[in-house]
Length: 282
Image 1: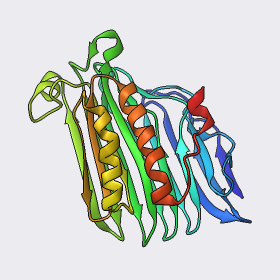
Image 2: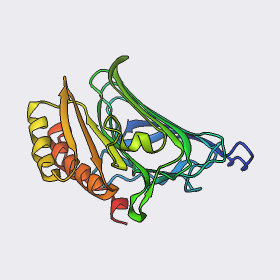
Image 3: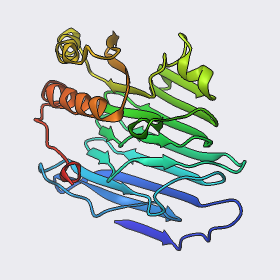
Image 4: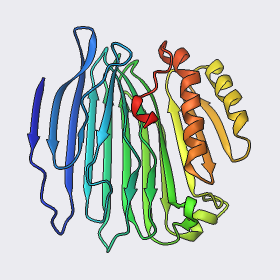
């Protein structure tokens, strides 16, 4: 395993500059971290193998939040035959900015035959935050991906709204350089939250995607979604890409729904039963 660690950059006027590059490959019957290059306060815990060959990774950002001027970059490359599940201990918080933009860029690259499950906790945007987030998923050949992203604008548990600030959020998914999904959201205060073409007053919006889906996958997903009738949620099948979108008054019901969807769909999509990451129970 090739590893290179660089001491954390000092907290300067421009904020934290952090970059983490990971390479995942199959070695001796197990998926392992075979390359790690780290700059600044972005890292992983020791990999786990609770279900044998697949590798479970927990992303860590010790500062605990992102402020204006911070720049976080993550790149994960998954080789053919490797399988990795990525999650984190808790939510990512984007705090009020004094002016500069906070940036978070994530690039997930899968070679043919690779599998990536991407389950971050929610992003929480505090009023006054100024940030730009981008997640790019690039698949080759028959690579498979299951993942979600959950955005929480304000802190609904205490009645706080994202009434000021701006957040630009993008997710793109492609296979062999052919775009399959391009999802962009720009929120700038109350009009974006309340408009009929915006979030219709809901502070939480979320997207679940899975490749390799079929008509029966969509039927199973819609059966599970029928339990979530209290808030807007829907599923669409585009070729073999399952896309599920949800709006909600708070994060917990969406997180719970997506975890149940994953448990329902994983056996059919990956041939494996759900192996709950231990960190979700803490």
